Image (cartoon, rainbow, N blue to C red; front, side, top):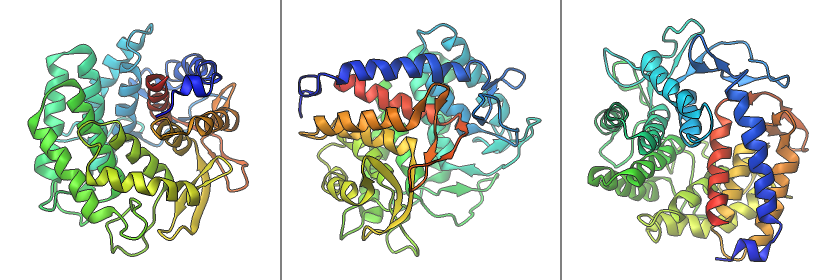
Length: 369
């Protein structure tokens, strides 16, 4: 792996500039206008004038992502108090006292809205609580982490090593089957747990999940990670998820060198060739490389940039992609969420979930530099 600082001396200064933008322009949005003090929850999104979008719902996943955001910045003024408030709100607003687990969303008045239990939400609760517990070591946080891990293992797990994407309020079967994205974030959550404690059960679950992903989700011809299990009708792959998976596998001593890591490593060049055009990461492609959606999303750009730091001989590409992220997606008032196939801004709102991607990207870059 190249020494990024030596190969591209501009990189540290660019990283410092973008980190400052994140710290001084983006994070404060969620301490000020993006925070509903009455509910002690982040609004779902802000408009271009940095005002809350009309409230239709609050999601447990968004609360968990913001818990990660503020617990990762716990040394900054006000961050530890905000993390504590988000942790309390996660339990107060979303926990299902009758059936266990956490509801998907509540309405503007705080009543359960979508009462289903979905794996994506629970994965982020595990991820955020693991990260938060690593910072504060409070027993209540660890007990919540343990409860979330137990729900995943008992309710969502299947016999094939995969997990159901969605279940009913009472854990009834909705025939959702497994989906790639929740499973990726579950792997991320398991890794977060293992980073703060030794846990043989979680380690075994992670290794089993990686083997099941290789068996059921890797396209045999091109090696890419499909969004639905192999053989599903109307399947596709997303370059952003290829790069996200690669980073998780490459950065994990436990998973690096395994069969799934080998598949994603070999497929990286194919995903780049088909799914990155003039620095833009495209949203969706068929397995044979045909573009199905050329939307450019900031999270995919961030995941590609982060993954590139772990690729050999790519320092120039890292610099080019970092400049593209800064120039195409960051602006004085925050960020642009999406650009269309022609590069025109197509989404002006700023969702509360996006800072998580930027935070993990910058953390990955800081680690390599």
